[in-house]
Image 1 (cartoon, rainbow, N blue to C red):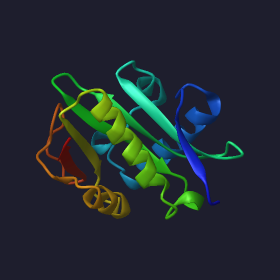
Image 2 (image 1 turned 90 degrees about the horizontal axis):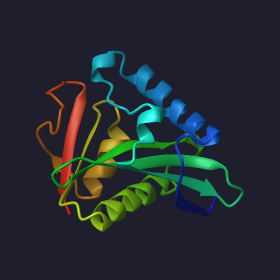
Image 3 (image 1 turned 180 degrees about the vertical axis):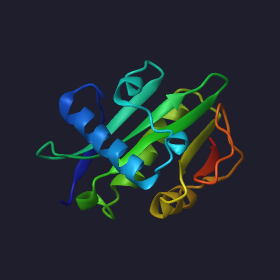
Image 4 (image 1 turned 135 degrees about the vertical axis):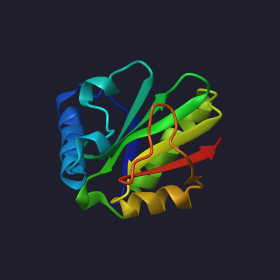
Length: 154
């Protein structure tokens, strides 16, 4: 699997919603306390304030997804970052994150923040390598020992 493309996608499209549900199941298995799970359900990813992206092979196989949620006040939030196990360590997550950042800049957002599970060490390493730094909980988030909060000025 040497090449893939990143495109906008409809989260309600059945193969895409299956990918999202796969991510939600992993999130639930990794973060047993539902109060510490902040992933958007499929329907919420269809909100007009969300830009949703997928990575696909040339044969259109879905490899992963990522989204930008536009809060009021110039804040963007990275949501639904997920790469299927067989596509990990191929640059898919980095490419999705770059697309989310580009969409945030294009939307004129000043800052991009995210919440991720403390158990997702590879994701945290990716975000840190991309220039995200630790921050306090933002928007409606509250302190949570199972969450890591990161931010980046754009």
